[in-house]
Amino acid sequence: MHAVTAVGILCLIMASSAENTKDRHMPTVDQLPELDDLPDPFRMNDGSRVASREDWTRRRREIAEMLAYYEYGHVPPPPGNLQAKPVSSQPLWDAKATLRRVVLEMGPDHRARMNVGLFVPSKPRGKMPVLMAVEPVWQEHLWPVARLALDRGYLFAGYDRHDLDKDDADRSDGVHPLYPECDWASLAVWAWGAMRLVDYLTTQDEVDPSKLALTGHSRAGKTALLAGALDERIALAAPHCSGAGGAGSYRVYGSGAETLAIITGKKAFHYWFQPRLRDFVGNVDRLPFDQHFLKALVAPRCIVSLEALADHWANPLGTQQMWRAVQPVFDFLGAADKNVIYFRPGGHDMTIEDWRVLLDYCDHFLLGKPLRVRQSPLPSPNAEEPFRWTPPTLR
Ligand code: GTR
Image (cartoon, rainbow, N blue to C red; front, top):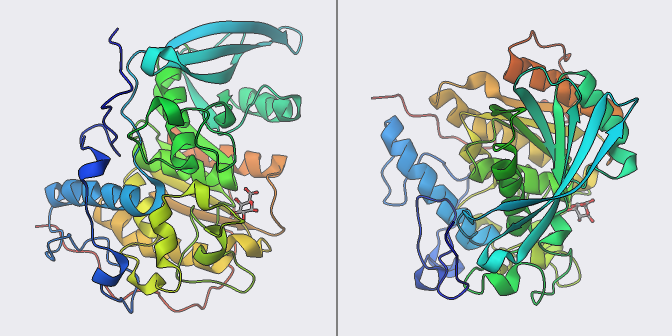
């Protein structure tokens, strides 16, 4: 076990690209061109266009770095010293299942602490798929979901993101003092927590590490999508009503949608984001990415974007257009069917029916079962395609 010291720690967006954040420079808003189209995910920073799988690997790194620099901040590498301290083991439902609770202790001097819960059936069927949520799943209001997941053959797991960073602008608590070199904002901290949940789960005998799905609702949905983008161990990322900073666009808005200007406002949620994102207020056409870039990092793994037609604040139109704009990346990577969007009627909440639909998708994509979900309507089926570029043909 190696000790990680707080001083001089390297922050990175993915384990393969360590760099000190202080040394990084990317163009400022006024140095960036104004774009009249959604940015092209296949256009490399040097102006050339992706033409091979190898090019995409390089482009993927560029995109990850761009999103870290301008939008979410850089996360530290996996701590490598994670210890799981047992908290409790509670039999449930006539001892048909157990709720295991542990605290993960990790990072500099093991001072980063995060509560985790895992529901396991008493008779696990070999190595099982896991439905993970950016939620403290041990809380009783989530037990019906746990029961549903277990009945459907999944383990159910989650964590308390607020153990790492409370949902406020204070950077003097949680993990921030442990990683003084890291410019990560709250969504990145919370996503890093999801990755540590994966670290833990992959040490558990009952877990099939190739069948991990991660979901979350709203701000937890933004977190789930970001974690899915950063961590290739997550086979399926399912942001639910995630909106701005998640699966919703910063450029294309339906009426009543939360905008980049609103969400990064001083009285709103600026601390969820790297402060540079706020520089694009009034200059959104200069943003060198939109959220289809975040989704592109998940490809060719699976995204199931779960949405609600009347959740206007979460921007159904802009979310639909991001789904369309990332499809060429899934096509290019030979995963055309893995870019899913599902709109149900209704507003901003995650109902048991939503969890059921998600499990239907998990059954299909993780377990190879026929897809049970019916085709859902789009909020704006006649909206014009928001881009003019096409996927490159493979060399
Ligand atoms: C809203 C916020 C949204 C969304 C939501 C939630 O107030 O503006 O972006 O994250 O909270 O998390 O419920």
